[in-house]
Image 1 (cartoon, rainbow, N blue to C red):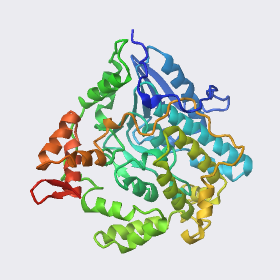
Image 2: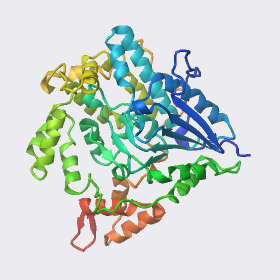
Image 3: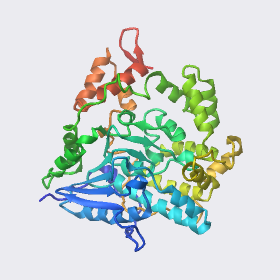
Image 4: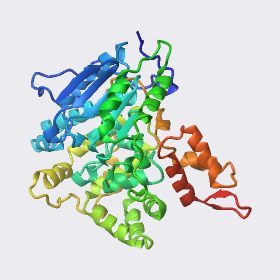
Length: 470
């Protein structure tokens, strides 16, 4: 009988303070909003609010916590699978309409909303540091809270139905659920671009961007689940080897990536260079200025300016500051800091106004932000979001794991930084660099495309004919 894997990865060392009071279900919680199942070695968590696109609420989180803790200790539970009921969504986010309604009731409601974020972030952190393989089926809409349940798992499976976005600036909020951690760690300024604009990525684009680790057709997910459930691990097999086995098993079910002629990489080539060029600044005003001066992709820049101009000025400035600071935060620090930021937003008028304008009003209307312009949002006002008031308790986490970079990042496609390091070692042509990554990543689908695109965009020929990183 397989035993729980010993956690020898130093990334999971105990550096975060841990609470032992695991949240429990309340008598008032909704029945059956999460379904749990055991299929041989798999323990599944199915979000079950399909009419609400499986949006996450406190009732669901309180049900999931004790199950994850129970499965962590069980020698029969080999891995965790997270999915959503129906064909439309894994999870479209947190139930922000309910939170905004709560907030409008005053201080007590704002505190209740802040308590929900404490639950949500602690759950995301538990998944991020879980000592067994976690697989998320990002089949359908995966936004906001759904991203928090997925992005920190070692395996994030996109399908042709996946729609990813962090749409928080549209509702007067900020890209939370660990966005401070994963967005700045995406290639170049793509994380900044996705965070500020709420741009959507569909299907295979999430694989290219580093959001998903695998791309499978939705028709094979049931077979994947069955096959994974049959995996067994000898007692001595530790977590890294288990993860490797899961990774290899899922690759067996790939039906191939869409041809580039049909679905070219969107954040690639000269457009990707423009994204890096325009979003590299540390103030929102400078980003606006760069977009106004953009000539190579003028139409894209104009559309992006229009998008940003409709967003909450406070959200834009707080989000940019969050991403720049988040590059240095550990995973546990991320959720603690985000909890303090979310509490501040619950007291800010833009959140209720943004949710009502975008999600409650029929038809949706343009929100009336307070303040209404970037100029009116002072640096001092932004910094207030990042202050932790004296005597205020920080978020309690229910796992003591911590790290500053994802220990499972190698299950996604190679990053631009990895490719740069290999190119800088000196190579006569593109081929040895591509071959290096194909071998390293066991010829995983998408590796060749990613490496070839990065080389084409970021390198030139030396006088001697070799590759030079620009």
